[in-house]
Image (tube, rainbow, N blue to C red; front, side):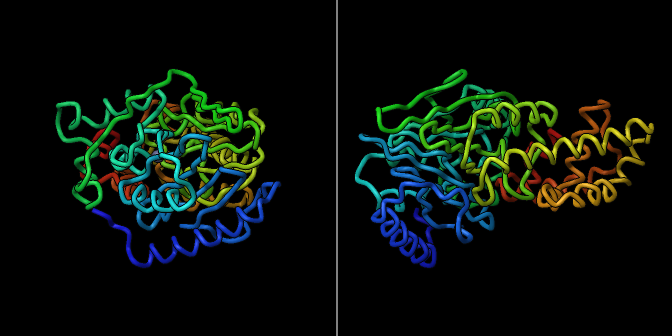
Length: 357
Ligand SMILES: [Zn+2]
Protein backbone atom coordinates (compact mmCIF):
# COMPACT_ATOMS: atom_id res chain seq x y z
CA UNK A 1 0.00 0.00 0.00
CA UNK A 2 1.35 3.37 -0.98
CA UNK A 3 1.54 5.69 1.97
CA UNK A 4 2.79 8.75 0.13
CA UNK A 5 0.48 11.63 0.89
CA UNK A 6 -0.74 14.13 -1.65
CA UNK A 7 1.45 16.73 0.01
CA UNK A 8 4.47 14.47 -0.29
CA UNK A 9 3.65 13.88 -3.93
CA UNK A 10 3.46 17.62 -4.52
CA UNK A 11 6.70 18.20 -2.65
CA UNK A 12 8.29 15.39 -4.59
CA UNK A 13 7.08 16.89 -7.85
CA UNK A 14 8.61 20.24 -7.03
CA UNK A 15 11.86 18.55 -6.07
CA UNK A 16 11.96 16.64 -9.32
CA UNK A 17 11.44 19.80 -11.32
CA UNK A 18 14.28 21.40 -9.39
CA UNK A 19 16.46 18.36 -9.93
CA UNK A 20 15.67 18.34 -13.64
CA UNK A 21 16.61 22.01 -13.90
CA UNK A 22 19.79 21.33 -11.98
CA UNK A 23 20.79 18.38 -14.11
CA UNK A 24 20.23 20.47 -17.24
CA UNK A 25 22.69 23.01 -15.94
CA UNK A 26 25.03 20.01 -15.56
CA UNK A 27 26.96 21.56 -12.71
CA UNK A 28 30.54 20.34 -12.80
CA UNK A 29 31.47 21.34 -9.30
CA UNK A 30 29.78 19.90 -6.26
CA UNK A 31 28.75 22.60 -3.89
CA UNK A 32 29.77 21.23 -0.53
CA UNK A 33 26.96 22.87 1.34
CA UNK A 34 23.29 22.82 0.43
CA UNK A 35 21.82 26.26 -0.13
CA UNK A 36 18.63 25.69 1.86
CA UNK A 37 17.01 23.03 4.01
CA UNK A 38 16.59 20.07 1.74
CA UNK A 39 14.23 17.73 3.56
CA UNK A 40 12.33 15.67 1.03
CA UNK A 41 14.08 17.24 -1.92
CA UNK A 42 16.17 15.49 -4.53
CA UNK A 43 19.63 16.94 -4.07
CA UNK A 44 21.97 16.32 -7.00
CA UNK A 45 25.57 16.14 -5.84
CA UNK A 46 27.19 15.24 -9.12
CA UNK A 47 26.38 13.60 -12.43
CA UNK A 48 24.25 10.58 -11.48
CA UNK A 49 24.78 11.01 -7.73
CA UNK A 50 21.91 12.07 -5.50
CA UNK A 51 21.19 12.73 -1.84
CA UNK A 52 17.76 12.88 -0.21
CA UNK A 53 17.35 14.17 3.33
CA UNK A 54 14.64 12.16 5.05
CA UNK A 55 11.85 13.61 7.14
CA UNK A 56 12.61 12.73 10.76
CA UNK A 57 9.08 13.56 11.81
CA UNK A 58 8.04 10.30 10.20
CA UNK A 59 11.27 8.58 11.19
CA UNK A 60 12.85 8.53 7.76
CA UNK A 61 16.60 8.32 7.30
CA UNK A 62 18.57 10.03 4.57
CA UNK A 63 19.00 8.24 1.26
CA UNK A 64 21.46 8.41 -1.58
CA UNK A 65 21.48 6.86 -5.00
CA UNK A 66 23.96 6.47 -7.81
CA UNK A 67 22.85 5.95 -11.37
CA UNK A 68 25.32 3.57 -13.01
CA UNK A 69 25.32 2.78 -16.73
CA UNK A 70 22.99 -0.21 -16.31
CA UNK A 71 21.42 0.06 -12.88
CA UNK A 72 20.83 2.15 -9.78
CA UNK A 73 22.45 1.54 -6.39
CA UNK A 74 20.51 3.01 -3.48
CA UNK A 75 22.06 3.88 -0.14
CA UNK A 76 19.82 2.81 2.72
CA UNK A 77 16.48 1.09 2.44
CA UNK A 78 14.78 3.48 4.89
CA UNK A 79 11.46 2.48 6.47
CA UNK A 80 8.92 1.04 4.03
CA UNK A 81 7.20 4.44 3.78
CA UNK A 82 10.56 6.10 3.19
CA UNK A 83 11.31 3.67 0.36
CA UNK A 84 7.88 4.37 -1.10
CA UNK A 85 8.58 8.08 -1.00
CA UNK A 86 11.98 7.83 -2.66
CA UNK A 87 11.32 5.22 -5.36
CA UNK A 88 9.13 7.48 -7.55
CA UNK A 89 11.73 10.23 -7.22
CA UNK A 90 14.43 7.89 -8.54
CA UNK A 91 12.20 6.56 -11.31
CA UNK A 92 11.47 10.12 -12.45
CA UNK A 93 15.19 10.60 -13.07
CA UNK A 94 16.06 7.37 -14.85
CA UNK A 95 14.62 4.33 -16.61
CA UNK A 96 17.48 2.19 -15.32
CA UNK A 97 16.43 -0.56 -12.94
CA UNK A 98 17.07 -0.16 -9.23
CA UNK A 99 19.21 -3.24 -8.65
CA UNK A 100 20.80 -2.83 -5.22
CA UNK A 101 19.70 -1.37 -1.89
CA UNK A 102 22.62 -1.00 0.49
CA UNK A 103 21.75 -1.08 4.21
CA UNK A 104 24.36 0.98 6.08
CA UNK A 105 23.25 -0.86 9.26
CA UNK A 106 20.44 -2.98 10.67
CA UNK A 107 18.18 -0.34 12.23
CA UNK A 108 14.56 -0.11 11.14
CA UNK A 109 14.85 3.32 9.58
CA UNK A 110 17.70 2.06 7.38
CA UNK A 111 16.75 -1.56 6.68
CA UNK A 112 13.02 -2.19 7.21
CA UNK A 113 12.26 -0.94 3.70
CA UNK A 114 14.24 -3.82 2.16
CA UNK A 115 11.11 -5.72 1.13
CA UNK A 116 9.82 -2.66 -0.74
CA UNK A 117 13.05 -2.49 -2.74
CA UNK A 118 12.85 -6.23 -3.43
CA UNK A 119 9.32 -5.71 -4.79
CA UNK A 120 10.85 -3.07 -7.06
CA UNK A 121 13.51 -5.41 -8.38
CA UNK A 122 16.43 -4.63 -6.06
CA UNK A 123 18.56 -6.87 -3.85
CA UNK A 124 19.43 -5.72 -0.31
CA UNK A 125 23.20 -5.60 0.24
CA UNK A 126 25.13 -5.13 3.47
CA UNK A 127 28.19 -5.79 5.55
CA UNK A 128 27.99 -9.23 7.22
CA UNK A 129 27.71 -7.50 10.60
CA UNK A 130 24.20 -6.37 9.69
CA UNK A 131 23.07 -10.00 9.69
CA UNK A 132 24.83 -10.61 13.03
CA UNK A 133 22.96 -7.65 14.50
CA UNK A 134 19.66 -8.77 13.01
CA UNK A 135 20.12 -12.21 14.53
CA UNK A 136 20.58 -10.48 17.87
CA UNK A 137 17.63 -8.10 17.71
CA UNK A 138 15.23 -9.52 15.13
CA UNK A 139 14.49 -12.58 17.20
CA UNK A 140 10.96 -12.81 15.81
CA UNK A 141 12.24 -13.29 12.28
CA UNK A 142 14.75 -15.92 13.37
CA UNK A 143 12.19 -18.05 15.18
CA UNK A 144 12.42 -16.66 18.71
CA UNK A 145 10.40 -14.20 20.78
CA UNK A 146 9.04 -11.07 19.09
CA UNK A 147 11.90 -8.66 18.41
CA UNK A 148 12.28 -5.16 17.16
CA UNK A 149 10.36 -5.60 13.92
CA UNK A 150 7.28 -6.80 15.79
CA UNK A 151 7.62 -3.88 18.24
CA UNK A 152 7.89 -1.39 15.38
CA UNK A 153 4.94 -2.98 13.59
CA UNK A 154 2.74 -2.13 16.57
CA UNK A 155 3.48 1.55 16.04
CA UNK A 156 4.02 1.88 12.31
CA UNK A 157 1.45 0.89 9.70
CA UNK A 158 4.14 0.85 6.99
CA UNK A 159 6.10 -1.78 8.96
CA UNK A 160 2.88 -3.70 9.65
CA UNK A 161 2.16 -3.76 5.94
CA UNK A 162 5.56 -5.14 4.97
CA UNK A 163 7.94 -7.83 6.20
CA UNK A 164 11.52 -8.05 7.34
CA UNK A 165 13.89 -8.94 4.55
CA UNK A 166 17.48 -9.37 5.74
CA UNK A 167 20.13 -8.52 3.15
CA UNK A 168 21.24 -11.53 1.10
CA UNK A 169 24.27 -10.12 -0.70
CA UNK A 170 26.91 -9.70 1.99
CA UNK A 171 30.49 -8.48 2.19
CA UNK A 172 32.93 -9.04 5.07
CA UNK A 173 34.97 -5.87 4.56
CA UNK A 174 34.20 -4.12 1.31
CA UNK A 175 32.31 -4.34 -1.93
CA UNK A 176 33.00 -2.31 -5.03
CA UNK A 177 30.64 -1.15 -7.74
CA UNK A 178 32.59 0.23 -10.69
CA UNK A 179 31.44 0.55 -14.30
CA UNK A 180 34.30 2.79 -15.36
CA UNK A 181 32.22 5.90 -14.98
CA UNK A 182 31.05 5.61 -11.43
CA UNK A 183 32.80 3.90 -8.55
CA UNK A 184 31.23 3.24 -5.18
CA UNK A 185 33.11 1.44 -2.44
CA UNK A 186 31.04 0.01 0.39
CA UNK A 187 33.39 -0.27 3.34
CA UNK A 188 33.26 -1.45 6.92
CA UNK A 189 35.69 0.60 9.03
CA UNK A 190 34.93 -0.87 12.44
CA UNK A 191 32.38 -0.71 15.22
CA UNK A 192 30.55 2.61 15.46
CA UNK A 193 26.80 3.24 15.75
CA UNK A 194 26.36 -0.56 15.55
CA UNK A 195 28.62 -3.55 15.06
CA UNK A 196 27.76 -3.72 11.40
CA UNK A 197 28.11 -0.20 10.00
CA UNK A 198 29.39 0.30 6.51
CA UNK A 199 29.84 3.49 4.53
CA UNK A 200 29.61 4.27 0.83
CA UNK A 201 32.61 6.09 -0.59
CA UNK A 202 32.73 7.68 -4.02
CA UNK A 203 36.46 8.31 -4.60
CA UNK A 204 36.04 10.25 -7.86
CA UNK A 205 33.57 12.74 -6.41
CA UNK A 206 34.98 12.54 -2.87
CA UNK A 207 31.50 12.00 -1.48
CA UNK A 208 30.99 9.86 1.62
CA UNK A 209 27.61 8.44 2.65
CA UNK A 210 28.05 7.51 6.28
CA UNK A 211 24.77 6.03 7.51
CA UNK A 212 24.45 6.71 11.23
CA UNK A 213 28.20 6.27 11.81
CA UNK A 214 27.95 10.03 11.38
CA UNK A 215 24.88 12.20 11.87
CA UNK A 216 24.51 15.95 11.71
CA UNK A 217 22.53 17.01 14.76
CA UNK A 218 21.03 15.52 17.94
CA UNK A 219 20.39 12.11 16.39
CA UNK A 220 23.02 9.90 17.96
CA UNK A 221 21.55 6.67 19.28
CA UNK A 222 24.34 4.88 21.14
CA UNK A 223 22.59 1.77 22.46
CA UNK A 224 23.89 -0.75 19.92
CA UNK A 225 27.43 0.49 19.35
CA UNK A 226 30.54 1.37 21.32
CA UNK A 227 31.50 5.01 21.71
CA UNK A 228 35.22 4.39 22.28
CA UNK A 229 35.48 2.28 19.14
CA UNK A 230 33.20 4.70 17.31
CA UNK A 231 35.79 7.49 17.79
CA UNK A 232 38.46 5.29 16.18
CA UNK A 233 36.12 4.38 13.32
CA UNK A 234 35.44 8.07 12.72
CA UNK A 235 39.22 8.62 12.64
CA UNK A 236 39.45 6.06 9.84
CA UNK A 237 36.53 7.75 8.06
CA UNK A 238 38.27 11.13 8.31
CA UNK A 239 41.36 9.68 6.61
CA UNK A 240 39.36 8.74 3.52
CA UNK A 241 39.47 12.34 2.35
CA UNK A 242 35.81 13.16 1.81
CA UNK A 243 34.83 16.63 0.67
CA UNK A 244 31.09 16.05 0.91
CA UNK A 245 29.62 14.10 3.82
CA UNK A 246 26.08 12.76 3.56
CA UNK A 247 25.12 11.71 7.09
CA UNK A 248 22.48 9.17 8.11
CA UNK A 249 20.30 11.90 9.62
CA UNK A 250 20.42 15.67 9.31
CA UNK A 251 21.69 17.95 6.59
CA UNK A 252 24.63 17.05 4.42
CA UNK A 253 27.84 18.91 4.97
CA UNK A 254 31.58 18.78 4.50
CA UNK A 255 34.31 16.72 6.16
CA UNK A 256 33.90 18.91 9.25
CA UNK A 257 30.77 16.93 10.13
CA UNK A 258 32.98 13.87 10.74
CA UNK A 259 35.22 16.02 12.91
CA UNK A 260 32.34 17.46 14.88
CA UNK A 261 30.70 14.11 15.51
CA UNK A 262 34.04 12.68 16.69
CA UNK A 263 34.76 15.73 18.83
CA UNK A 264 31.36 15.41 20.49
CA UNK A 265 32.13 11.84 21.55
CA UNK A 266 35.67 12.75 22.64
CA UNK A 267 34.42 15.66 24.74
CA UNK A 268 31.65 13.49 26.16
CA UNK A 269 34.21 10.89 27.20
CA UNK A 270 36.45 13.57 28.72
CA UNK A 271 33.56 14.95 30.77
CA UNK A 272 32.55 11.50 32.03
CA UNK A 273 36.19 10.57 32.68
CA UNK A 274 36.48 13.60 35.00
CA UNK A 275 33.58 12.24 37.04
CA UNK A 276 35.01 8.72 37.08
CA UNK A 277 38.44 10.03 38.13
CA UNK A 278 36.84 12.04 40.90
CA UNK A 279 35.38 8.73 42.07
CA UNK A 280 31.81 9.97 41.74
CA UNK A 281 29.20 7.38 42.54
CA UNK A 282 26.84 6.24 39.79
CA UNK A 283 24.14 8.36 41.46
CA UNK A 284 26.39 11.42 41.38
CA UNK A 285 27.25 10.81 37.74
CA UNK A 286 23.57 10.55 36.92
CA UNK A 287 22.95 13.83 38.74
CA UNK A 288 25.77 15.51 36.81
CA UNK A 289 24.20 15.00 33.40
CA UNK A 290 22.99 18.59 33.09
CA UNK A 291 26.51 19.81 33.91
CA UNK A 292 27.98 17.53 31.26
CA UNK A 293 25.40 18.74 28.79
CA UNK A 294 26.20 22.39 29.58
CA UNK A 295 29.93 21.75 29.11
CA UNK A 296 29.30 20.10 25.74
CA UNK A 297 26.94 22.84 24.62
CA UNK A 298 29.54 25.48 25.43
CA UNK A 299 31.53 24.29 22.40
CA UNK A 300 29.65 25.69 19.40
CA UNK A 301 31.15 23.13 17.02
CA UNK A 302 29.45 20.26 18.86
CA UNK A 303 26.53 21.92 20.67
CA UNK A 304 24.06 20.56 18.11
CA UNK A 305 24.87 17.01 19.21
CA UNK A 306 24.12 17.75 22.86
CA UNK A 307 20.49 18.68 22.32
CA UNK A 308 19.20 15.14 22.53
CA UNK A 309 19.75 12.05 24.64
CA UNK A 310 22.71 13.25 26.70
CA UNK A 311 21.73 11.05 29.63
CA UNK A 312 21.75 7.96 27.44
CA UNK A 313 25.14 9.06 26.06
CA UNK A 314 26.59 9.60 29.55
CA UNK A 315 25.17 6.26 30.67
CA UNK A 316 26.77 4.48 27.75
CA UNK A 317 30.20 6.04 28.30
CA UNK A 318 30.02 5.42 32.06
CA UNK A 319 29.21 1.80 31.40
CA UNK A 320 32.05 1.48 28.90
CA UNK A 321 34.49 2.99 31.40
CA UNK A 322 33.39 1.29 34.60
CA UNK A 323 31.18 -1.62 33.65
CA UNK A 324 28.52 -0.07 35.88
CA UNK A 325 25.11 1.28 35.01
CA UNK A 326 23.54 4.46 36.31
CA UNK A 327 20.98 3.52 38.96
CA UNK A 328 17.47 4.87 38.85
CA UNK A 329 18.30 6.65 35.67
CA UNK A 330 16.41 3.91 33.99
CA UNK A 331 13.20 5.81 33.51
CA UNK A 332 14.82 8.97 32.17
CA UNK A 333 17.12 6.90 30.03
CA UNK A 334 14.28 4.99 28.54
CA UNK A 335 12.50 8.24 27.84
CA UNK A 336 15.55 9.60 26.07
CA UNK A 337 15.96 6.36 24.21
CA UNK A 338 12.33 6.44 23.21
CA UNK A 339 12.81 9.87 21.72
CA UNK A 340 15.40 8.48 19.38
CA UNK A 341 13.79 5.09 19.16
CA UNK A 342 10.74 6.84 17.86
CA UNK A 343 12.79 8.19 15.00
CA UNK A 344 14.28 4.76 14.47
CA UNK A 345 10.92 3.03 14.68
CA UNK A 346 11.81 1.06 17.75
CA UNK A 347 9.22 0.70 20.40
CA UNK A 348 9.74 1.13 24.11
CA UNK A 349 7.97 -2.18 24.50
CA UNK A 350 10.41 -3.90 22.17
CA UNK A 351 13.40 -5.91 23.26
CA UNK A 352 15.59 -2.91 22.58
CA UNK A 353 14.49 -1.33 25.83
CA UNK A 354 14.53 -4.51 27.85
CA UNK A 355 17.74 -5.62 26.19
CA UNK A 356 19.64 -2.50 27.21
CA UNK A 357 17.98 -1.32 30.37
ZN1 LIG B 1 20.62 3.76 13.36
